[in-house]
Image (cartoon, rainbow, N blue to C red; front, side, top):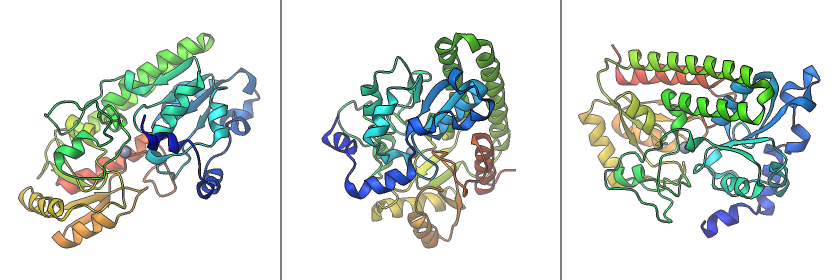
Length: 334
Ligand SMILES: [Zn+2]
């Protein structure tokens, strides 16, 4: 762990206020989602790290779980800081569900929480390092490999293994994770195993349907290349045989180099790109700059790291369908 990650665990005074507004303490909030049936005492208390984990926990757990999410709606998850109180409360969860490598502060706190049923989603599917054939970098560098290869800078996903953590944006991989979460819930709460299995099967089927929609919708397009600010769509691109070109990576404030901008302009012209995508939780500045320089349109491609009022849909499936609509339009689907 780097010095930077340790620092993330100690909120500064300036941050404390923002954190307090954005994050409700775990103990105060346990059971709110299902408090109505008065069965709170019997519920499995699940802490989910961020939205894609929350969605799995809620879908699979149904009425038997009380889900608390560490990353509140609208908070950019990669740089999440936790309050000491939250870190302490983690230890009281029955199950912690997270995705290692995307939120360094969460990874550290969970490692220290000592909860028996800790589910790391990255162990439930196979992670890949996108856009590089140069080999794995398991050193202390924080830069994503796909970022390095594509030549853009400032793409820090906090991933120390160098693997791309954005597995949930591929419905097939997300279904694999769902199955693993289902099994883990069965083990943690055997009394409700049959329900967890039933809910998991239903979710896996739903994700299978979504995969078919993407396959069909993106089969025949004028171009296979899309440009996006946040290089979160490596798995999605690979699944549906598309090419993701990232502008500047995760940090919306980081300016792409003039060389990268020039390169992207050339790619846009060569591959007949029509649209530059940006995301809901970050600035659209670089996307608009590039689009303005090249006469392209801009649109939203949502990495689903959180759901807000601005999201194009109320849950994972709905927002993914909006992403498919946006991709079909941008790629010129026939
Ligand atoms: Zn991301």
